[in-house]
Image (cartoon, rainbow, N blue to C red; front, side, top):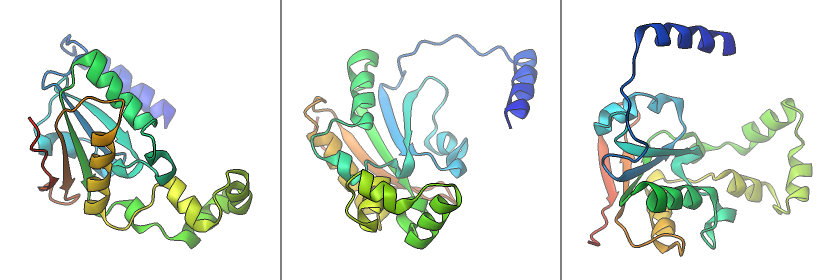
Length: 189
């Protein structure tokens, strides 16, 4: 894959001259979404975003795992703080999606995959004090309802002591059609 990417980059450099743009997002917005490969390209088109419009932060499931939710000192909050204080972000959209893999984690498949790749789930659970398989699922960020998860992540961001009071909205995008559904509209000015 690396060689394919490098060859594609050579072709890109020969054919393209990307416009020079600043690193501050033109729309003063940060978008938190999932790392799902089905969102690549389609996501920006569905939201009408162009290069330079918004910061895009991707995590597994557009979520914050349960162990990292308390206190608000996690990587997502740190990244948003950088966007707010250093890049002028004044609004945040949390966008989960339908058919998210973290909403349908099969514990047997997870542990079998870990074992096949040389990681002993029980040793990891013990070493990290995760208690049991449910603790491992919690650490991974697994959830059951994408709408509820988006709402919870929005609330965690709103309550973070590291961030100012700016509008934080929650949406879900349909992975097949690209249709957006508002889950939580922030009415704060």
